[in-house]
Image 1: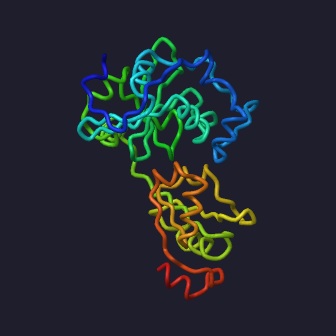
Image 2 (image 1 turned 90 degrees about the vertical axis):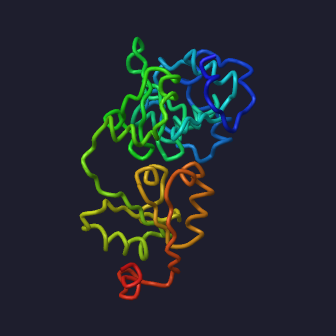
Amino acid sequence: MWYNKFTFFDKQDGLGELPESGFFSKCLTEEEIRLYPNMQILDNGKFSIPLEFALTTELRELLEYSNGGGIVNGKREFGYFSLQHIRYYYFSYGFPKYAPYFLPIAFNGGGVFYAYDFRDLLDIKIVAVSAGDLGYESSVVIGKSLEEVLSKTTCIEEELDKLYQRPETKIRLLFVCTINRMRSATAHKIYENDERFHVKSAGTDKTADTVLTNELLNWADSIIVMEKHHRNYIRGHFPDIYKTKKIVCLYIPDEYDYMQTELIEIKG
């Protein structure tokens, strides 16, 4: 079999039963919503899910050997999803909205998806696209088969840099506190005109001026929280983002007013 030459880690039991036709294209079920309460629930009337999605032969063979797991080849890491988790990542990261014809099948361990591109059924390709910058224009083709993609030993980020030369971009910072009116709002104000950064801010509480969302977290390159419980909130409510994003805690207590001199001096 094509995958026998690769080194596996975290091997799982193989897929025992093939999914029904249209498995990837069906709307979210009540059971999925119950199992994954943090899944981004999209209005299926607004964001259509392509009927063209299908289990490719090579992916079926891989899942029958190990339903989820990982392959490593040199610097190339391929943490691939189980059948059910392919649907989970498709919905929870907003693919129906930003790149509906991309079907995510794996992560590289650094926030980059491997995905099938189903826009041309006669020429299905495998692309790489950042979890924080989903979109067709932000993706690069990295191969036409899993064997081709996994035979390369470079880190996927290096291949992205080589294949898709992007202009130098600003770092996207997301400041997080509780209600987004004092600490994170102050940080937002301090850095909003800094040419090195794009800045947003949010709060974990439902009464926050801007409530923290999956979309905001995906947008950020770095997430900067004020206290440890804010980081714990992200870990509890957005566990997949917690695993893939850089989160820095400043350990600033909730005892300052907006733009208070002492608060500005801490952030400076």
